Length: 369
Ligand SMILES: O=C(O)CCC(=O)C(=O)O
Image 1 (tube, rainbow, N blue to C red):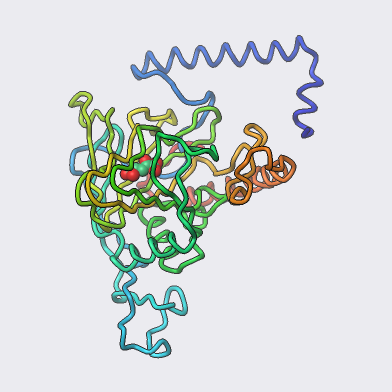
Image 2 (image 1 turned 135 degrees about the vertical axis):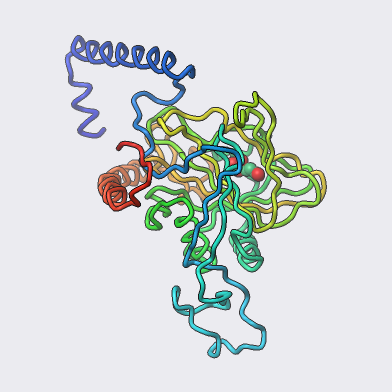
């Protein structure tokens, strides 16, 4: 048991009760005020701050932003170029068979598709070669039947196959994540496991496969997924859209909104609202593949940081789970140790984020820490 837990249990019962009552009183008051002021129920954990990371505004239909990223597209190096003749990648060192298209930054538009939930789309975000490299790395690492959330069990609500791919396995993947960082204005160092992001997840759907409606945020603690960043790696012959059945885009009432999985495109949406509440309209699904197959990736970024509550769930962190999917075989001691070190890291992380936030662009609307 940790020192903090020890201290808590040693509190006199009446004092502990008073603290709990006071917390409950504040929480109830907050829930009432929130509903009165916004017309929405507060569904997230209480208390929780506004997201500390950048969030794009959602002012009008079709609103666009142009981004320039120095992490431009990788293409396959020309077949006739000997490795030693291939230009060294000025950004990444030795190119490993990936050649940059040119030395210009990659310019692309982000377009707002819906304001509730906030959904944004980017065409030509990744090159054909990068799509192929992702798929190739996924197969090399090994797809397995998908599981849901932190559970290690297969679930009929998700029939696809998935694999976690570490960004350092392939420079093309690392290059893509750096581009993602430029896109969503989150420092690249945070897009690593144990900082703000989970490892990139690749998903493969065959004909008739799907992922039923679900949300990506968690409300049992303040720390939560805040953005879901999807990239589509092939064109699907029919079906396979990402569906949002609770969307209310521009107050047009509730309707089903669906985004086509277009090869090379990216779609991202916020799981949280700018005030820190969870956005229940972000409910989404990977719709049935009616013809063909679909490869895509998920990148989930947390506010404020990513760590798993091993103690709460009695589970081992995901990177250590591969050989120990049976909950009985998991070692809670390893888990607690890793969990604690992640919590320690969180302090540094928060300091780092604060510095990034202070150095951010002047017109950036960051939430309060
Ligand atoms: O396949 C899709 O389009 C959505 C995937 C998804 O929702 C997920 O993996 O969380």
